[in-house]
Length: 123
Ligand code: HEM
Image (cartoon, rainbow, N blue to C red; front, top):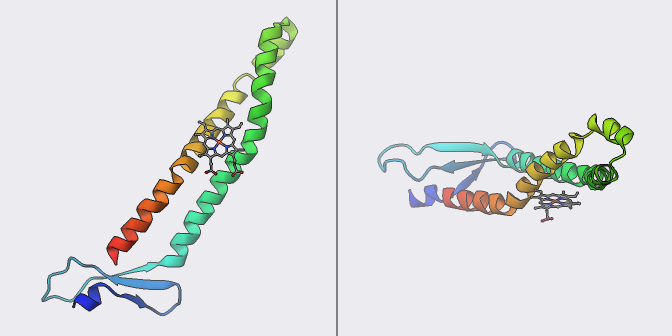
């Protein structure tokens, strides 16, 4: 039984694995959880890639627009200020995107560490 608990079984496809959950009563059949390893990995990689890409590409307009906004306000030309009022929210929206995606990137190493620990505990 001990052996069963600590083993991962290869199933029909190479991508599938099953784990015998450790908390089943000794006299009963074990609960076997089947999960798709490759699918989980792909999903994580997809998210990581897109959060990093969004963070990278939104960084460019953000870095350009913030000094532009500041300069327009400092110069104080009424025509320019009126024109800028329409676009004034844009740097804040970009900053919001940067903060959300940046926070995800910041937490990523901790998320990966946590998931790795959970998986090794499940085995
Ligand atoms: C609250 C705001 C932000 C947070 C929390 C944040 C956080 C992060 C983190 C954690 C990374 C990944 C570093 C690594 O590779 O381990 C990163 C990368 C980066 N950040 Fe930010 N960031 C923020 C705002 C900004 C802003 C305002 C800019 C520029 C306008 C910027 C530009 C970049 C760039 C260019 C990268 C490299 C992306 C890549 O090519 O991988 N970030 N940021």
